[in-house]
Image 1 (spheres, rainbow, N blue to C red):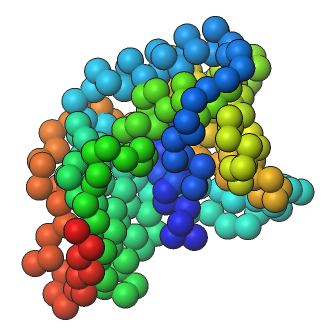
Image 2 (image 1 turned 90 degrees about the vertical axis):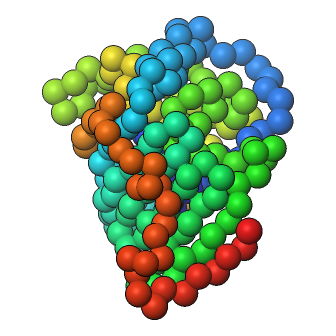
Length: 220
């Protein structure tokens, strides 16, 4: 389940393996869908900071629940902090600390600026133009809201999923559904969003002093 972190935040948060950038796009995209996605990107870029709580629901192809998780994400510029069920991921924009509470171990990796790695911030910007073909399916009622449903299909057909649905209102993504080829479905929902709050830069750096006895695996 730890590997699920890498998808976060198409909701926002946080990462199935499909998020590595595909090279080159082909096919025709829906202009109305692009207009909505571009608005999401522009709105996100205008915020100084973003804090959000999210939930993750996992189901099989028949709709039977396979489990659920909840977590939070904070973002400031290129910095981010993700917390989800016993695992915290810190990044100050140059390094990433992945802390496992159960083992009291943290793994540190250096960020390669030239790589196509995905961060929570990138999921709210222009990832869709390189990775997907997309179209607007129409309006969907959910939780008292009228949301725009946008369907994305991966350009790289070797990816483990075949479809992603995102639900948008007022340039904000509220729900993301990922459909794997195996039939497994992942649903990420944003429960609360706060913007432009004051967050210190130190909040995005793992502080070993706060975790006595922590084992550090430094791969930088």
